[in-house]
Length: 85
Length: 539
Image (cartoon, rainbow over all chains, first blue to last red; front, side, top):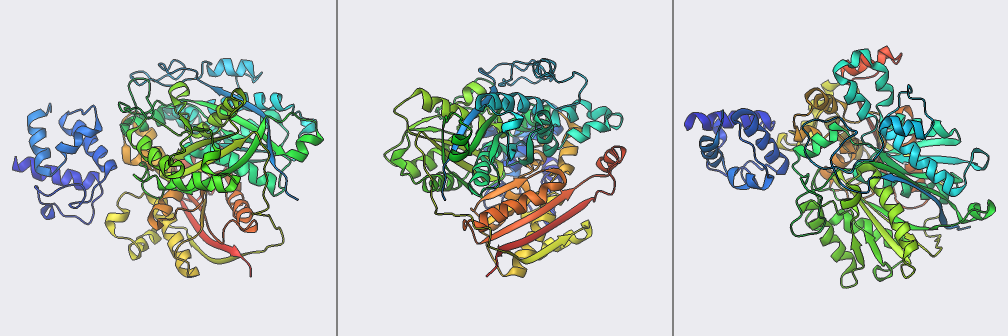
């Protein structure tokens, strides 16, 4: 799980161009949207693309992302349970 | 002397139901669309255009609708006087480009039909009587803004007859893009319904023939209805989402009413933008309630029939509005809403009663002064964006968005103006770097790139950063793009509609694009060019 969490941190930094953020600065339990990293709906779509590309998880509805992308930890948990690659 | 603007002809082509795409070759794409029931070949046959002629589907649809409009208004070359074409498109010739993209080096001539301005030129060339062509690209409000500009050109005496509208063909490019934004419904869309689940894309074209009442009477033309007023405002909230309060939509509708000399209760029917996405319909409902309160008229969206025809929507729905008004004798004033990506929101009002006002009288004697100007010609300068923005603020912006915002902020700072009244953008090619990446990866979804692939991303990015809710428009007319933008700035300042205008010319190209254009004999295109200037009336 820890490996997946650090992998997700660096993938998110690259995918969302968070050039001023370092992986070690991200708290795996902090909210990704709103106060935490300050991501928005387009970032959520990029995370959906990322889940499909790297972990073979396809979401049919963007609103499903809300619970999954609450934090890096919840994302890692969901990926571990549902990954197909 | 004040003269009302009349509509003397309408031409339209659109789908009459939502179904699966059959003319667009896009295997694996499962969402329903509103597709026009003619192939390119059939359209060419109907229009007597040689099958061998390289012409985009956007242009073919445009020619079809404009020809209908000309017939309806009885315009032939002898009666055309100073006749201007104002056309909206965003997709432009993308259908040709994407069809040939894998082998584009052997089809470089396709690129001459690619840009939006070239598509309008192809429409104008078919008729041969247009003295000027102007292309507006504000995504899904392009057609409505074309009508708005058409009225301005007539009221200021710059034209005798205007064909105003828009054309847009379905493409894999924007179907994939909208799919990646996850806002397409797999069934027929259900605007304003609680169970709505997204939009259906459509295609088509429509044009209104507009002229002054005096000109129409002089040539004995029948008058279908009157253009009564319009409003253009920017939501300045997000590139692809509308604000929860519907600020841009509220401002556009309020300005249209003010411009038309009407009160909310004077409107009997609103053809809403009503795309069927959860976000748009919530935001538009909030705005409608703010404008109309307890006197809400009949509100309807026709997008479940035509699909969302994006740049053509404003014009297609204007024609539908006019037809509905003619069928319903108790409807005197009807409103048409069109909202685009980046919050480019426009509202138009048509009426069975004439109206004109001297409130904004065009005065050609007013001189225009440039308060400040800033230019960028190299990517090396882009680092200076850090002087104005935090990395989290520019992290998503591609090259042209950074250069356009930077020159804008520099010019504003230099002129001592925090907030311009109006933002006018000129670009011949728009966000080409992102468009090329999307073409290379079709049909893979790329939400961030798609969100920044429309021409009006540039102007709305500036508006979103400044939180500028004023008039916001984008002109794309090849080498004349800047001239069109300056002409509009002149119209607005000289008619007293605004005091300060931020005008910019922004272009980016890739090496690949430059090579393709070199093969067409067009050389020395810059890889990056941004220029912003602040204009005002000379004291």
